[in-house]
Amino acid sequence: MTNDLLILASNCKIITGHLKSILIDLQNQELLELSDWQFKLLKDISKLNKDEFIKKEIDFINSLIKKDVILKVPKQTLKYFKELNNEFENDSIINNSIVRINNSIVYYQDKLISNLNSVGCKFIEIRILDIMEKDILFEFLSRFKFTTIQSIDVFIPFNLNFTQCELINLQNKIFELRWIFIYSTPKNKLNNYNDKKLVNTLYLSHDINSKNCGVISSFYFAINIAMYTESLNNNTCLNCKISVDENGVVTNCPSIKENLGNLQFENLNEILLKKKTKKYWNITKDMINVCKDCEFRHICTDCRAFLEDPKDIYSKPLKCGYNPYTGVWEDWQTHPDKQNAIDYYGLRNSL
View 1: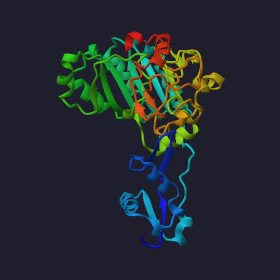
View 2: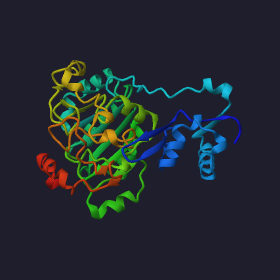
View 3: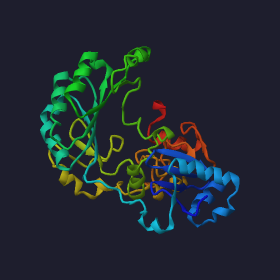
View 4: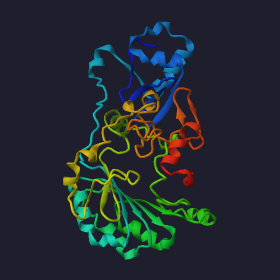
């Protein structure tokens, strides 16, 4: 080891839970679970005497230096290394939206799109609920050109019978289109369709409804600066997000039924002035029971629609099976402590 100081790169963060700690690399989107000695070593890495390191510590540090997780810095240049800005950067009033549509969208599509554009919405998920004329869908999607929308995901029911050529044409004509999901695909046809490997098209066997969301899983972990900083300051599911149903009714998400207003009769900016609209926006993981003791809290999404204790707005998400006090993932659907809430939300038949 040289006489240079050792520091943790500013894009690398240690998150401490009740039982475990992890190291996340927000630039390379990697996660490392830390043992007790690794945590203690990294926690005070810049203050330690390198001459006293034992072999396993030297090997561990060298492995992190190769990944630019630990940096060797001349003491005189240390002042030039800045900490990561923990503020969540977002220049939109509404960043994400979920819109459910059918043929009736033609009656207020201009007002819907104008409202989303006025608040700077960038990402939209469109869910087609039932039989919808393809021409109406295409016309609706084409109207997002020259708006603030940067990315569109669309969920289309299998029985709409889109051909491969029609899907390719949709992708070629709608430049903002990121993913197409064909849901309620018969299971015996699932592999045949997915084997066609259409670009950014995925066939799903399950239906989409308001009771299916809110599952917390390591599969959905997002290791990046946006998720990390948003989790420190806001709710990672509902911050700057709205849902609009086929009748124009605005809610926080499809699974939260509290009516915030109706875009057919009100402007979105008027709805956003209502205190209840932003009720969940600033509930961070550090405020949520159990989550605040979890080592994964700053890379994990959230759910306020389905709670372990439906009467407590700060309750742990119902559909999370991780226990930070034991470090074990369990099946949330069969956990005895969750059965009353499962019945309360009427989820029994959807398990």
